[in-house]
Length: 58
Image (cartoon, rainbow, N blue to C red; front, top):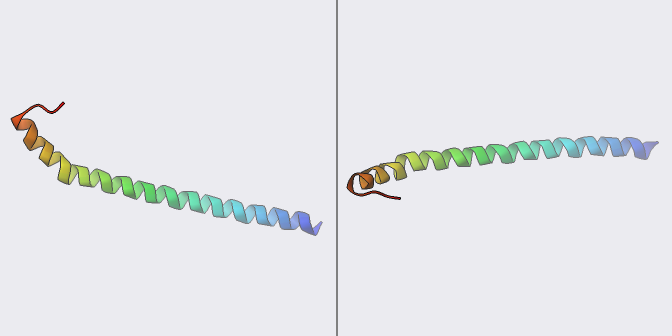
């Protein structure tokens, strides 16, 4: 009986840890993609706009 309760408690703890880890990784990915988007809009897009005025970029 004790091992069953221990197993249930361990399962619950591991499940919470997994959910927390997935949430943390998702937040890191969202922040990374936001940084990439910001970099593209502030650094890359202006350069491409000036080049597009001179020639077509396929």
